[in-house]
Amino acid sequence: MTLQLRTPASSHLGSYLRSIGRLASVLAYGTSLLIVHHVQPIAAKAYDDLCASQGMTFGEGESVRTLIIFMILIAVPLVFARSNGLIVVNFIMSSLTVLGAYGLLSTAGDTPYECFTQAGTYEDHTSGLEGFGFWILIAIFFSYVFLLVDLIVWAVKKGLALRAARSFRRLK
Image (cartoon, one colour):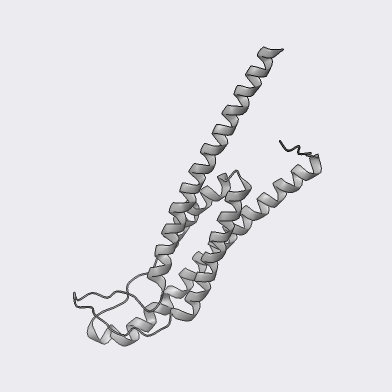
C-alpha cells in the first residue's frame, strides 16, 4: 500500500492543471470547428469552378448553429471528466483533431478529379471535409464512452469507500 501525502497546495495545483487541460481541449476543438467553417467555402469554390457548368454545385456547409451544437456536444464530456487519465486522453484527441483541421487548410482547395460518380452524385474525396466530419463524430462518440467508464469507476470507488467507512465505524 502506498502512502500519499496531499498538501493543500498540491491539490490546488492538480485542480489547476486539470482545469488547464480541459480548457486546452475545448479551445482545440473550437479552433478545429472554426477552421472547418473557414475551409468549407474554399472547397465549395474549388468544386464549383470545375463543375458548375455541368449543373452541379458543392452545397451548403455546416451552419454556425450546427457548429455550436457540435461544440456543446464535445464540451460536455470534457467538462465532466473526473480522472487525470481521461483529461489527458481528451487532450490528445483534441490535439489530433486540431492537427487534422490544420491539414484541411492545405487540402480544401484541391480540385476534384470528377464532378459525378457512377450513381450521378458527388462524393468529396479531395477536400478532406468528409473524413474530418467522420473523425469528429468518432471523437464525440469515444469521448462519451470514456466519460461513462470514468464515471462508473468513480462511482465504484465511492461505493467501496463508503462500505469501508461503515465497516470501520462498526469496529469501533
